[in-house]
Image 1 (cartoon, rainbow, N blue to C red):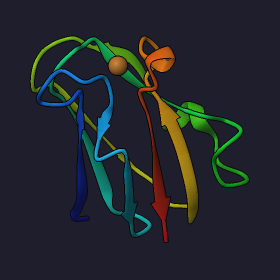
Image 2 (image 1 turned 60 degrees about the horizontal axis):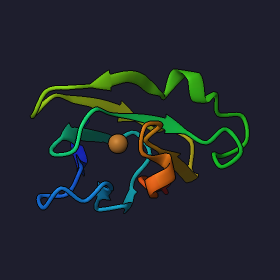
Image 3 (image 1 turned 45 degrees about the vertical axis):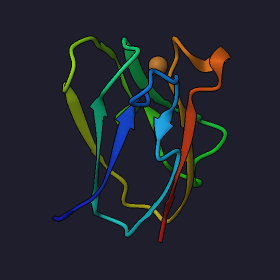
Length: 101
Ligand SMILES: [Cu+2]
């Protein structure tokens, strides 16, 4: 299926965040996270902030992305809002959300 969105991990100026931090996609479209600045980063979905019945373990990318340009892609099939964060930078507010329709 089409790549619906690309999310940069770390801003171009080094800000610790996901850019854009909020995106909307259609169910089944893929979302690619690309390591940009300030790594290592990872992506962990908040098990308390995903649609009912969704298992976050199958979506998470807990391994750290360490190299520039390194990426991973996730596809969300259940409609609703998903919140996620970067474990090393959660305290710095590195988090985002994806709305699937
Ligand atoms: Cu991070």
